Amino acid sequence: MSAPACDLAPESPDAAHALSNDSTTARAISRRKTCDAALRGSKLLVIDEDESNLAEVRRQLAAGGFHNVVVENDSTAALRRVSEMPPDLILMEVVMRRVNGLEILASLGCDPRFDHVPVLLLASLNDAEIKRAALELGATDFLTKPVDATDLLPRVRNSLLNKSYKDRLSRHAEDLEEQVRQRTAELEISRREVIYCLARAAEYRDDNTSRHVIRVGRYVGIIARELRYVRAPIDLLELAAQLHDIGKIGIPDDILKKPAKLTDEECRVMKQHCEMGLRIIRPLPADELREMEQQFGPLPAGRSQLLDLASIIADSHHERWDGTGYPAGLKGEDIPIEGRMTALADVFDALSSERPYKPVFSRERCFEILYDGRGTHFDPQVVDAFFRRIDEVVALQDELTDATG
Image (cartoon, rainbow, N blue to C red):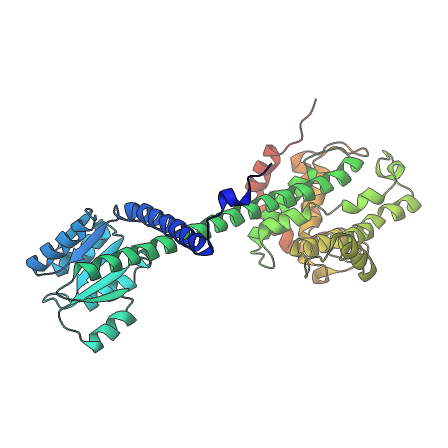
């Protein structure tokens, strides 16, 4: 049972207001003391050619609890001192014989390390023009000498509080950026894993070799780098090439795994895997897109560059340079370069891997077949690029050989 209201409430509204004010004031004072204790450890740098002024400012700061104070009476060494011990706050005379305060302030403004460091300028003269110039150069505040402690200490404290707030915001922004970087990296890993799993799903239906899709993608990357391919990032192209045979998911096993030569009708069905791959990867029709948005909410606008590349490759990697390929019978440079590169990479890996319908060919025999296809099956420039990087190709093939036994 709760306590009676009369036991908790003050005897009058005025008393309640006073209690509330007392409580609020006490909390504010407590918080102020906590902040001040933290601020007193701040590093302060005082720059002035007048030794007596330095001593007086230092005394006033010490009286206010600021003991981490460094003084500098050589204005030419001021910037070096700032770099050696990056301060939390700078107190600086404007008028100095060697280098004046405005010149030092301008130099500080060119260094992003000091963007949050408050600079309080001290001057014997209340010169409006100097004050305007100082504020335009980024001065935080302007104090007239001789400095009064009741003026100096609150301005120092408030400037340090403002810096602390900006530093926290900056750290928070950096933390958010790091979280975004980590999340982006996680999404990239997830995307690659999904693509690889999807590619392997098609590959396992064909010959149960887990590394074929990776090798084809990497071979395409080698060729693309040699040809100075620039239409898309190479790593994206390698990933897209892994989906070249995704359409095989739709081919019946009795055709896909047949160890003997396919009949004409079976060949016709097998060739449909290019069109099936295109249908799997290409953009969704408007009606299907609306259904997905009704189920999952608005989808991101635009088209994935990865899927654009993958759809091009799935559709064109069985076209031939002489126009006798499929599905469209494209010829020469009418075949997308992505399809031409994948065609050679796919054939090379198929020749050098065991299939239900053929044994492994020797590396030398694979190279002979590829070169014999130069200008008929394959783009001559793609063949030449492949052989210019043959050492890299062989090293990759050895690295990613399928496990046996």
